[in-house]
Length: 137
Image (cartoon, rainbow, N blue to C red; front, top):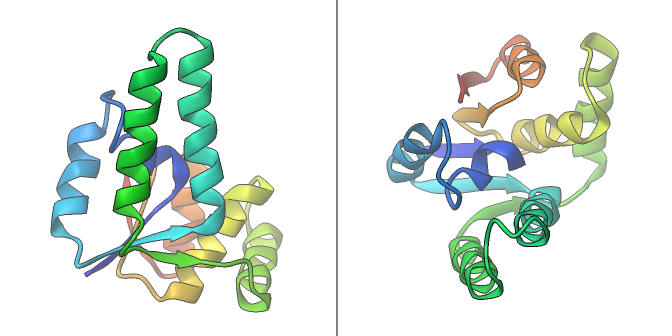
């Protein structure tokens, strides 16, 4: 089963917070982890913010980054392609979404995933409207 995670959901794989157990369960069920290319920068940005806020040490940051890099070796990572942009624009025209949320959705549609996992209610509604099976964390 191909499971797509937006950045906010995938970050829960590394940082224990509400929803982490659900994300870990979907990661275990997935035959392939699917991400938008922008997810990597967004998750690293979250790790950097945690370090700046002194919520993780420099060693913990390096460990989190290493875990992320190891996880994406076999992941399907969707580039920003004309198909992704077309899906993203369509989602923006039909829903109230932020641009990056629409790119995640466009990536999931381009990858033809089985499940879409996100923490964002509007993004989940747009994904459901687009025909995806949705899990809101």
